[in-house]
Image 1 (cartoon, rainbow, N blue to C red):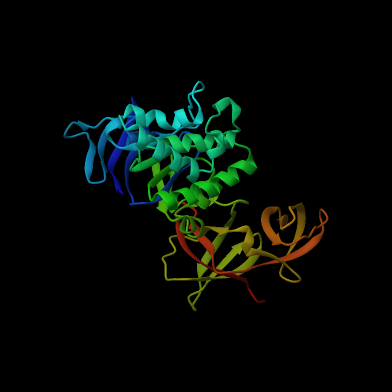
Image 2: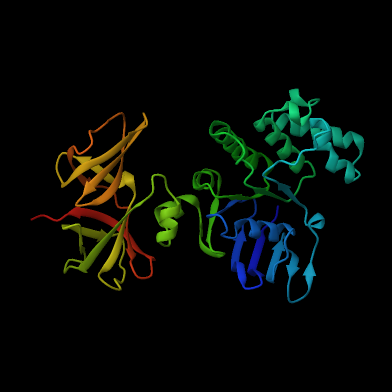
Length: 371
């Protein structure tokens, strides 16, 4: 199974830069999601690795073979890169049965009939679509068509499977089910998966590593839980997580004991960093995940702005001196609008960002200053 290496890969259209000097290594048997808002360069990156788009400059290596090198003039065609591509619209042949759709690519590759039947049967069983073998795409649901498209893509045993938002046409329940299937499939096939999505929940739940992009520039490339807990900057922190992270403008000054006085909305708190760091200026942004804000019997005074109960958990918006913060309370609970409450901070995953550069400085714990 291959490792994919991108070295200084850039794609320009005139003055517009789609992907800017991208360097990354997709590990053997990894499941990498290319994540970011529309127009960030994720699909362009996928198409360049697959050979469907030609980079302006840089080098791409798949399984030790240089498939593109702008300086040496190397540009191997998509057909010779041994990759599979799963499109958003599935692109199934409407006049062919499920069996014929899956077998089509293998027939073009001149596989023997008995080998084709063995491979198709294997994929029908793996994707649990044996009973639909004689049906046409119009007779299948969206999820069933999805599975046929995956089977067809996997049929020639590609080294790498590329997927461009393959679940976006499905309803929410089916999308969740197919995420589970894709994760299981990744383990069963031992293939390298590269997956484009703008859905951060999809990226977090599926990937072994997340490549988060903005305006063609790589923002962070790490395992999902690292991206969630230690985002490189405010953009990453804001893009990942639902409900979104709270951002609180604050002033920070170092104290003699190594902790920091952090003041926001007229409230003084004490920040204890998890490690030593340099504070560039007193202007900081506190990044607090909703699960780290606890509605408590005592603490900082606030008023309930709104509540969104969802059964297992309730999202509570609270007003603190005209700053609206989001808290997640686990369990069935509800509050009246404008009800007076108190809140406190918990955990040691609260982040300090530099306000000027927007970069993460350090994470740590936050406590209300004792008067």
